[in-house]
Length: 387
Image (cartoon, rainbow, N blue to C red; front, top):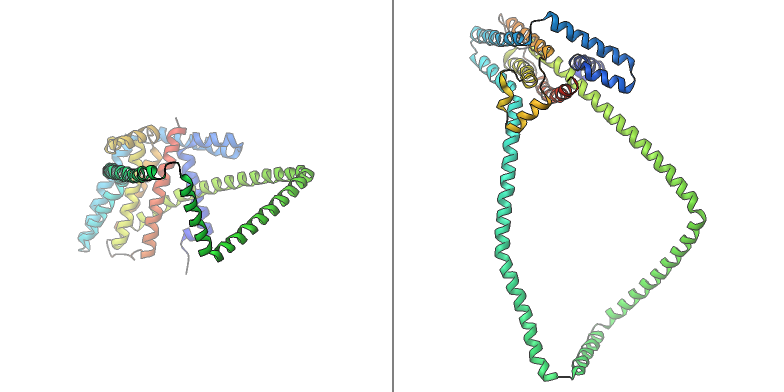
C-alpha cells in the first residue's frame, strides 16, 4: 500500500518547501529581517528574490481589485458547472453539499469569531450571575452566624455570672475540681498515657539526634561548602544552557511544523480542487478548498469590508494586525484552486470518479483547519513586518 505524501518523510519535506516558498513570497521583508538577524546570507538572497517576484507580479498582473472580480466570476463558474454535474448525474444533493460547504468554509473565520465572542459573553454572564447568587446567600447566612455567635457568648456569660457569686475568691475549688478530673482521666486511660509518654520520649530522642546531625553537617559545610557551591554553580550554568537549547529547538521545531502545515494546506487545497467532483466527499473537499482560500483572502485584504462583519474588537484587531493592502499571491492561489476545481468537476461529467476515502476526507478536514489557523497567524506577522 502506497503511503499518502503527508505520511512520508519526503511528503513532509515537500510540504516544508512549499510552505517556505509561500512565506518567502508573501513575507519578503520579514524574511529579510530574519535573515539579517541570523546572519544567513542565503536566506537574505531568497528574501530579495521574493521581493523581486512581488514587484514583477504588481507590474505585469492586473490590479488586486480586478483579480478579486475574477474570483467572483470564478465562483459563479464553479457553481454553474457544479449544478451541471448534479443535473447530469441526477444528484442535486451534490450541488447542495458543495454550496453549503463553500459558504461555511468561506465564513469560517467569522463563524469562529462570533462563536468565541458569544461564548465569552455567556461565560461572563454566568460568572456575574453566580457572583450575585453567592452575595445573596452570604447575606442570608451572615445574620445566622452572628446570632449563633451571640448565643454562645451569652451562654458563657450566663454561666460565669452564675458561678462568680458562689465561688467568689475561692477559685482554688475550681482548680481542685479540674485536678481531680485530670487524675480521673489519667487513671482511666493509663495505658494510652504510657504509650503517649513513650512516643514523646522517642520524639525528644529523635530531635536530639537531629540537632546533633545538623551540628555535624554545619561543621562539615564549613570545610567543603565552597567546593559544593562551586559544583552547584557549574551545574546551574549547565542546566541554563540545556534549557536555552531546548527552547531554541522547541521554537525551531514549532516554526518548521507551522511552515509545513501551511505547505500542506496549499497541497490539500490543490488536491481537493482536483477531486472536486468525485461524489459527495469530493465535492465537499473541493468546496472547502475554495472556501478556505477565499476566507484567508477576504480576511487579510478586507475587500468588500468583510472584516466589519466581525465583532467590533476582533474587527479592529484584524485591521490593525492582519490587513494587507493587495495580497496578489493569495488571489492567484484562490484563482488557481477555482480553476482546478472547475476542471475536477468537468472530469466527472462523463462518469463520477472514485470518491475519496473516509480516512482521506477526515485528514483533509483536519489539515485544512490547522492550516487556516496557521495561515492566519502568518498573515498577522506579515501585516506587521511588511509595513
